[in-house]
Amino acid sequence: MMDDRLSKTLKVITGQDLGGDARGRCEIKEAGKSDVDLLDAYSRAVIHVAEAVGPAVVGISIGKETGEEAFAKTGAGSGVVIAPDGYILTNDHVVHQADQLTATLADGSKLHAALVGTDPGTDLALIRAVASNLPYATLGDSSLLRVGQLVIAIGNPFGFQSTVSTGVVSALGRALRSQQGRLIENIVQHTAPLNPGNSGGPLVDSRGRVVGVNTAIIAIAQGIAFSIPSNTAKWVVSQILSHGRVRRAYLGIAARQRSLNRRLVRFYKLAKEEAVEVISVDPQGPAGRAGMKEGDFILAVNDQAVTSVDDLHRFLAEGFIGRMVTMSVLRGQDKFQLEVIPGEASSNG
Image 1 (cartoon, helix red, strand yellow):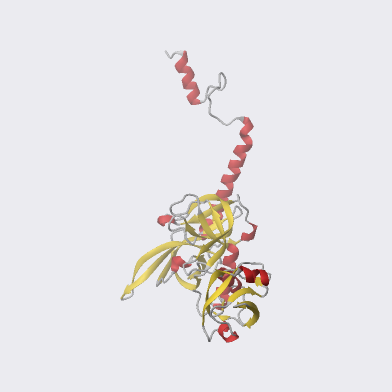
Image 2 (tube, rainbow, N blue to C red):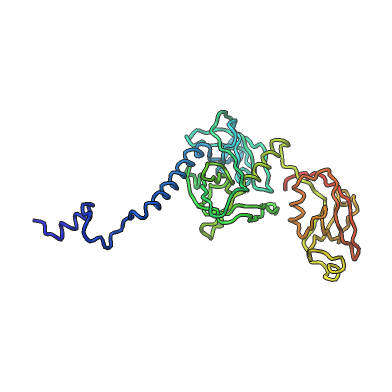
């Protein structure tokens, strides 16, 4: 015959003891129902996004030619279909120098793909799979992101297809260096866990809109991941589709950031104490033809202060190819202006 203590214990385990002394009982009280509702809403949002966007996320396999029309797999990453006729957005470093590209859909089917265009300066690339009527995701407006906002990363880490992870936007306006040294601005920092193979996959908001393209993690840290904002991706995609490449202006100089003589800063009432020193000039380049010389300091472009090479890169990405710009220059102790017509860079590096 079961004693009273054992009987009570059994009722507690089976949930039959609904009364009595509730001290120590670990359960959600009625007062916490709103918290449960919030968690349920969170779960529903993630499920909805995974079901809606997951079919548009692909795995990308990269092959290198080994001779006699044979290819060896040399890498893998992720991508997201952004148009039903097979256009896939991914990272440049995923598809860089690939001889063969294969996109694997969420249902396991494999499609041959070809490179449409790439932009190492933003670590983005556009490829196209040989297919039509594919499920696709919509590029959202990354300028609307807010710190603390829920974001969902979908990709193929370590080859595990259609893996979903969640996090929040932890910072906005970060900057990263591309492999070519160009500064990528307005990077989205978030806490959704990423691993090798996630590169090129989408970062999605709770409404299923792609707000970023996952690009990098800090290996020694936890909860620090980075995505190229969707607004940057929109611009890169439009450039690639319009021109086959991303067009950027160039001046034909090499330069570095340097501090200015404080006496000259005070004399000319300059707003900044740093400027860009020209360390070499291509005499046949736009700046050289306009009269710029080695040792000149570039203070401003079209009245916008220039204090670093990144400022120049930022300015030259604004579409001034073939348009005259006015550069404020300091040569020795003389300050004057040069009118320069930037040319088009021959490559994206």
